[in-house]
Length: 424
Image (tube, rainbow, N blue to C red):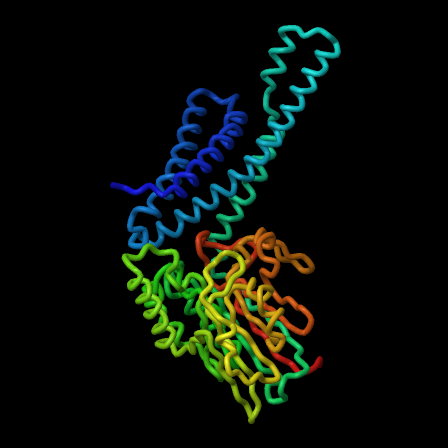
C-alpha cells in the first residue's frame, strides 16, 4: 500500500491553488481567441501543470536517483521555473482582485447614498470584469524570471567567477604576508551532468597558485556515490599546504530515505573515505596548524552547525579543545548562521570564518554598489565579506548547484583571499 506523505499532499494542494489562480489570467487574455485556440491553450496549461504534480510524486515514491540525470536535472529546473513565474503572475491577479473588490464596494456605497439601486447597477456591481492591463502586466513581469531562468540554466551553471580580495590582518605573522587562500564550497557533485565542467574548475583553482585550498562543505547532494566519478578530478587540486575540508548539511545523507541507521552511518563513513582518497584533510571538529619559517596559522574545522533549522552535528568547543591559538586563526564552518550564533560571541580569537551553504540562492542581482537576493531575507550574511569588530566572515556563493540547475545573477564562485599584514 502506498504511504501518502501529508507534506506532499499539502504541497500539491498549494500548487493547485497557484495554478487555478494563474489560470484566471490566461482566461482573461485569451477570451477574444477562437474556441479552438482557447481549448488548445487550456489543454496545454493543465497538461504541463499535471506533469509537475506527477513529477513531485515521483521524487518521493519512485527510485528517483536511478533515473536519467538529464531528465532528472532539467525537469526539476523546469518545475522551479514554472512555479516561480506563476507565483509572480498570481501577485498581479491578486492586485486585480483587490482593485475589483474596491470598485464593487464603491458602487455599493454609491447606490446606498443615492438610495436607488437599479437591477443593472447590481448586475454590474457583481460582475466587474478583470483589468486586462493589470493581467497583461503580470504576464509580462512573470515572463522575466521565466526567460531569465531558462537563460541561467543554459549558460550560467558552469560560468565560474574568480573573486579576489585582500584581507588586512595586523597580527598576521610576517612569513604569511601574501598568503593565498582559495576557497571552494558547495560542489554538489550529484548535480553535475559530466566531468568536464568540474575539471575546468580545478584547472582554474590551480591557476591561482594557492598556498592552501579550503573546501567548506556539501560535496554531494544525497549520498556518497555521487562523488565517485569525480575523485580523480578533485585529487588534482594543488596547493602548497594541501586541501582542508569539512562536511556540509547535504553530506550527512539527511535528505535520503535509508533502510536503517547503519546504512546512513555507512554512507557518511564512505564519504569521509572519499575525502581521504582525494588527499583532502577532513577536519572533523578538530584543528590543525600550518607552519612557515617557524610561524603558525591555526585552521579549525567543524561539522555542520546552524541556527536556521538545519542539523547540528558540530562542536566548536570540541574543535578548539587543547588549542594553542596562533596570531591568526581561521575557522571552516559550512553554515554562515553559525558565525552570529556562536563564533563572534564566544570565540574572539577566531579572526576569519569561511562558509558557504546559501549559494546566494542562485538568483539575484550583483552590480557595483548593489547586491540583492531573496536569500537575504533568511540569512543576514549570505554572500561576500562581513565584519564584526575585528572578526571577519566570508560566505562563498558555491561552485555547484542544487534544485534549479543554473544561476541568474549570482554566478558560481572560486574565492581567492590574500592575507596581508598591512595596506600596501
